[in-house]
Image 1 (cartoon, helix red, strand yellow):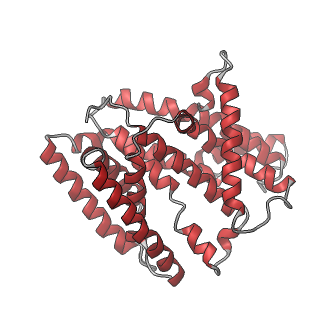
Image 2 (spheres, helix red, strand yellow):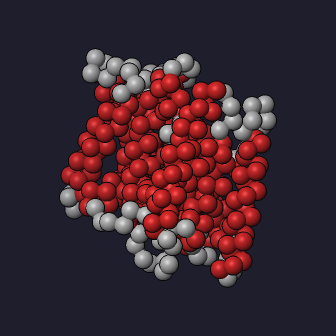
Image 3 (cartoon, one colour):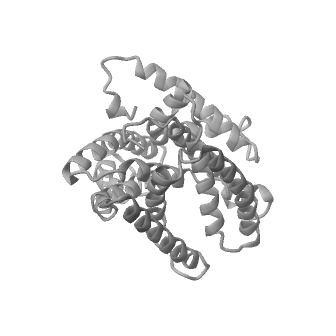
Length: 323
């Protein structure tokens, strides 16, 4: 597949990923994630894999060809760091004013703690993804070179890495066995495998296999979560199935394209809007199973409209704000 060929399905992947991320935070900010009982808890726990989809998508796009490290770093970090610094600072100020940080009590302490909070990811828990993707970006040029080669060599290398990853994570997901950061590296590499050797090879077969896979792995994942069993393989099967099906949606949609383009802005700001809605309108957003879904739809719709407005302001530096 030519590297410059647009795959409309990847816009659907990114749009679904940001929806699941907003859904997850709409769920957790109501403390519904703390409810160990009830099937709704296990259903949500078994569907909120937006980050895994984002990581697969990033791997699919970033690992396609070897890039000079400095050129790659300049392009990727220029895309994520300026908006993160802007909205991270806004979030820090809002959180400090609301008394979210016990060690920030006045302007001098706020100034003093800003850089330590920024460096250690304590501005907001939702920003952990920035540190994860930055780490993956740093090792991407090395991964690109490991995976370079002819089709057969690359396919074999990718398959070997993914199999080792699956075996490793299957053991580390068992309670009592230490976890590993290898988890998202595996999704990153798997994204390239799907892009080069699954997507657009046999569309009907991929769609059927993906739909069947989701129909099997999602309820299996819910069961394993509810029973307290390790669910890593079911999680992978579910994420892979979603990625495959969404990637094969071969139609152009202006709305989906825009949500895809605005997804980073939505990610950086959505929890501010969720927090405002939950604080100001608690009666409208009760701690019920349906609230996170309604919240995700409302927040993405509102931020979509906001981005449309910002997009039309010619003097506004779009990349600096994340769109």
